[in-house]
Length: 106
Image: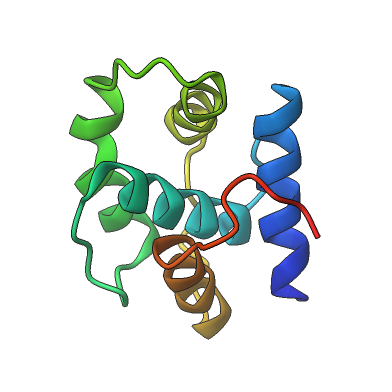
């Protein structure tokens, strides 16, 4: 998996407000990005189901005005992560948590 593709996919979907999340790679980047935007601390080695459970209360109570972030929340709420997990997912979570080029697709 080329991790930059998962990142680009999430950003394009949020910018266009279209499509759905297609896998755990996208989920991990999106979750990291959401945690960065909301100031949520998260364990970087969280497994898929526990990551979703950790951010779910914040997702359900989100009331922000930015349309891209609202769409990001919609994607995360609708996605049901599988048990699949590897080191690239941790890399994507960290990328989202440390994102410097917010909403910019390279």
